[in-house]
Amino acid sequence: MMADPIRYITEQIAGVLNSALTAAQLDGSIAYQGVYDVKLNKTRDTRHGDFYTNMPVEMVRITGKPSDYIARTLLEHINLSGTYIDRMEIAGPGFINIFLKPKWFYDVLTLILKERDEYGRVDIGDNRKVLISFHDMDIYTIVWGDCLANILEAAGYDVLRERYVNSDKNMQEVNDEIVNLRLYGVVLPSWFYERQLYDSDLRETVEEMDIMGYVRHEGDDMRFVADRHNALILKEGVFTDITMRMAYYRRKIFKEGYDMVIEIGDRASADTFETVREAMICLGCEPEHLGYIAAPDYSPSMEGAGRDALRFMLSSSRDKEDGLFEVQYAYARICSILRHMDSNRVALIPPEEIDFSMLHHPAEQALMRRLAELPHEITVAAQYRQPAILVDYLADVADLFHKFYDECRVRISNNDLMYARLGLLEAARIVLANGLYILNIEAPERLC
Image 1: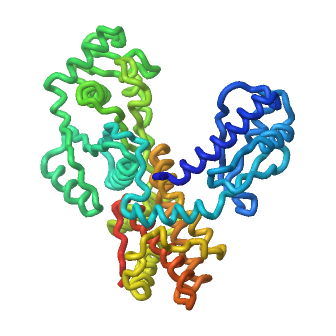
Image 2 (image 1 turned 90 degrees about the horizontal axis):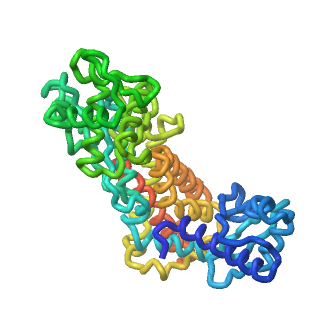
Image 3 (image 1 turned 180 degrees about the vertical axis):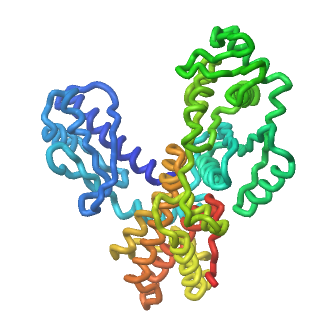
């Protein structure tokens, strides 16, 4: 039905609005041809609906009509039959608020309980091959990059993590790094040694750029002249680090067939990468096939942090050292409630037989709404290459659970309401478990 509930409902809303626009075109109410790109946003206050659009405001320029006229006309032509949309209302000059039927939220909870471990995974990557490349970076950068790689995998990309090893690094240093990374949950399946480039890649890369006119010879030196730095690619007959990276990325994109190569590094190396990227574009690489992401700086409080705490703190945008504890505590508390109250009965009840219409309390509805957003949050985190989006979402879910727990009793005499609340808790447990699993962070059923 809807692997990503937010995408499903926003596409439905956009379709309804465009159908209304088409109907208004046909009767001459609005003179505009084609399908309009409807932009939707979440409302901050659910009293004003679940989503809103400024479509009437944006259409003023292309129709010559006032925004309030466009809003009224669209609503006069709206057909909501067969949708999850309850109603639409004009809000201010040219804004439309959209209210969803409660059934949409109930169906999302049913979806979560059915999909279980698969809930949250999306397919925006379409199995495209992505290389996450780590050069000479500290362990914090690699751990952060590993969290990003996990999110890209959850979004449907085929991801390979690879460590680029400079020629001056000995095997003992490599082995020590492997051991240290595993302490923080990072296993890199591919280690690329710089000396491999000397077989043919370096020579082929420089010759190709030379033939295409991107190289200037200066005695024993060569310069790449297509970028503003005129970077040295050969100095006194020796290939430079920039040339090594050019040859490396040429090999990965044109020989090994990666659809996208992302280098994880620090801000200081960004300019060097731009030179390499310019060279790849000159050789025929599409700009979107090669990217550089500067990992966030780590704080002194992270030093000495354990495996899970480090992964969580590195990926969070919030300055809270106990953020992971709050999420894991929420998960463990939910497990405890289900363990002591349910005795597996919710697991045996078909999700579609749970009466979620019993959930009316604001704390229940707030938690319900946020649970619907996990697939969307993973999509956005993958698109923006930001693990913090997923981590902060999990923190929000944990906060909403704690508010629910404070305000809503679960052990009550009304069995229908009790099992609706237990179903809601099981859905919250699934969301927290799946989010932590994607980040490779433990979801403990008990906290000692």
